[in-house]
Length: 220
Ligand code: E4P
Image (tube, rainbow, N blue to C red; front, side, top):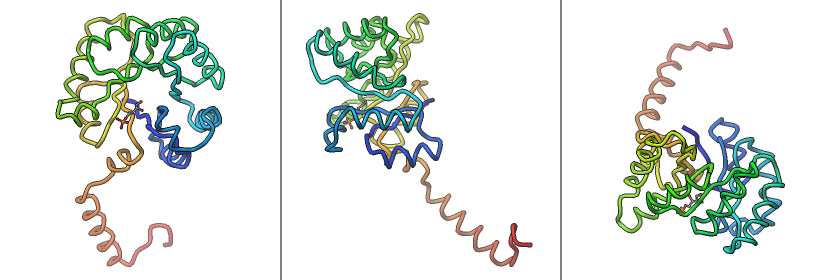
């Protein structure tokens, strides 16, 4: 299972990459807007930090402009993955860029039917958004189960299921149980995955007992 981080915060990306927990990065226009910085500069810097796929989203919605934007983004670095919306024009761009050898992430997927279209368009990744379904009291993870099952029925579908809009570690575990290929999550969720009160309690007890021995592993 691959871990992508859903952020454009270079400090966070660097710190999680040092821990070996980043296989790629996803951004979107909202995430880029939060940085207050030039989009292309930010993408170049992230691509230098992490060798895995870095999703950079087009801003246009018409075919011609999206294709131009996608080609420009693809030239920024070898590991750029162009992100396009799941619309008829977006999927046409996906097909074209994929033929040119560019990785494409089809985003804003909210149905299994849409995911089938993304696979047929040759997407590298499809991004179903689980959290936004949960936000409207609908079981987002059911969509992941459907897409994984459907893709498994057709081995010629090479599109990877990239679980997006992840809100907490339970989403990550559920996605893993379903066999999703990738999860993209905010850095906060990666950090939450390390945490367990019994780990903290157990470690405190071990430290206290070790101190009673008066020994030092390195110093004796
Ligand atoms: C995925 O690529 C999206 O950027 C992201 O996961 C959206 O998450 P949100 O619903 O928290 O905005």
